[in-house]
Image (cartoon, rainbow, N blue to C red; front, side, top):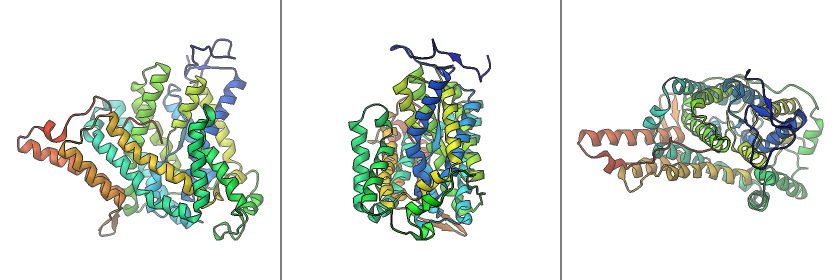
Length: 457
């Protein structure tokens, strides 16, 4: 049977209370299209937050999100239901490259610097995926055990704390209302509304911001227009704004650690979908990593954000019990259509800083906590000295954003913290072996689970 053929599930109209629509099945086309629209709504809040925070074109981000999802489905042979949205892991290195909404409007040179890093991360992830496809994933666990992976994920989130504070201070009350709205929506709403809590909070924050008059104030970043006037002058149809990457070594090095997070997110996504569908997707790990790598590479070539598998869409699948990959093709089509509406992109570009401050305070914190989640799920033993100093030094270096200069190369806290984690763990392990010490006494043991079992972005 062709990979682009889906079997009708039952009569195609309902899902039994004990059943589920498998990846190679579908409901009727109208229902499949409707579920695809739900997937777009679920990913929209988080995916569009990245261009809002970086100042990159929102329509272009949406365009490459759609293209990336189509690439992912094709490369994984329609066996892995997944939507590829913007990865928050890129925010810190993009900010270090000057690609931030604080510098808006961004010139082509600045955007190009950031895209060079996105492109590099995509190529590296593609290579990793190819190696995993050919050799398996055990070498990843040896090179980057959970204590190292967790430290790097954590330091990337903590490195962003200063950016979140700056946005919060731009409009503290709007930021507070936005954050409170997201938190309440997460626990007060069940089902689909709870899954789109970020979008709900952003809408409530926007209403509060409008009541305070923030939408009527002219801005230099908008050409002297107010947000309302800026949206009004945007056209209803047009192609996204494309950019080309440039390459500066001092910028590129900060993007290398991002690959570790993308690997963890993809592996975690596969484990989550395996648990829901009952189908073993471990053999698809290499293809999934290659697919996300190629999607990120294509985005870097044209002006989009780096991509990753989205936990928000796992929530939609869990709520609907529809795992059909055809629904994700419908979602990709919807996203592609939205990317061709400049007025939609303009709405993202004018989001007040206070709203971004509230959202980023939560989301950057969640990235940091994902590092701790990796440690907990893999039972990292912090009574062992090597684990303790590996995490401790890396977190301080990354959070304080240490820098080092070597000629024209400038290494920021993310790069230095990642190198520190790898060097300390493996370096002290080598010393222990040379001295004839028991590595279990110095490193401890971890659970037999792959490094970085996270399913969030």
